[in-house]
Length: 466
Image (cartoon, rainbow, N blue to C red; front, side, top):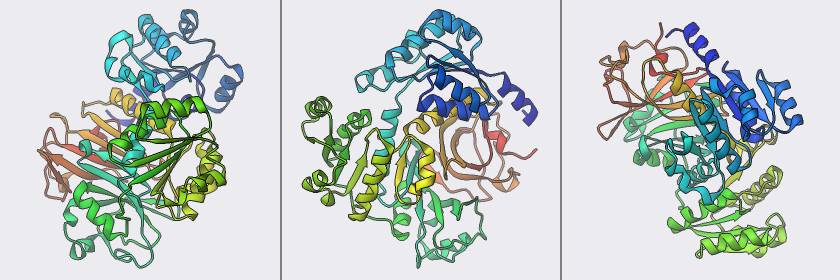
């Protein structure tokens, strides 16, 4: 499939989005920019008008849980229907009705932890093809980041056998001034890891052997989890294990995260303003300490010995509060802070990405949807298994399974003519991680990590030139 054919296929794909909140807005921005035919259904006229003014989308005003509104939105012709209002019941009902009206694939956002069982129960039942909980995914993301306290981001591939982490190169680091081709002479097991992206003063590089690492670079490293940990230590990453965590805000994320932390034997203290939520969280997690109070008030934080915790996780509903709390924690010397945010623009203006691990739930959801939609567009059938956006969303890291009819099968990497700004980061074959060299041949069933800058990769063969 050439670029013109793919563009035509994208423009023909009809996607309906219900809800103009943070998640819906992110989806409208992402999907409309990729030339999909997007229709937004929203009952708040002002929200609908704002998004129609900003993005190339169609709009329908009304309640998406009603048949007449869905018929007005031509749901019978819809390829992908995505319900992401702030009300789980509306999302579930709208998806069921949309399926009955002819939508080919339906997705419902569910946030309430009490509905967690629906995530596995659905699987095409009730007329809903996929139920996604962004808060659960955010909790999982936060948990992964606690494994590498000094990393800014941690992504998981090959069912946890490989990771992609980002770290800053400090002044005097052992890799400061080294070309990538020289790393093997300095470090053991370098064949199990690969620096696949470098961010330098706002510029992005997909580096090759002669690329020289400099102090203050942010490097994205992938590879075997065990060897990655060794390299992480070499780069000065903290090896102190997280044993205690303070959480400010008993949000839905907290209800998913707290039991996972307890399961890992991490001591948890939660501060929540609303007594009802605090009592419910405490009742469900007897091993956690839950305090009713204003977690943004310094006096209370010091009374609860914030400075003695290994990590702080800020989950209030106000981005500014989360930012200030994370900055305070850093000044107190707390080794790891995880900051939940909804407004991405605040990250750029505060410079928080340079200081903290930031988790954006609606961005995780958007990535999941783009992964799914790209899978529908693929031309040869090489399955997309995982999809992440890294380096301030400028780079995509995608896990593919190589299909038997892929043009890459049986070719050594030195024979493959890749498009610009694309790299094969790792190969997973028969339980082993392979950092690719020019002589490695790809086989059907291999799983790959593809790293792409300013490229939209829907199918594995998209990485080939011509």
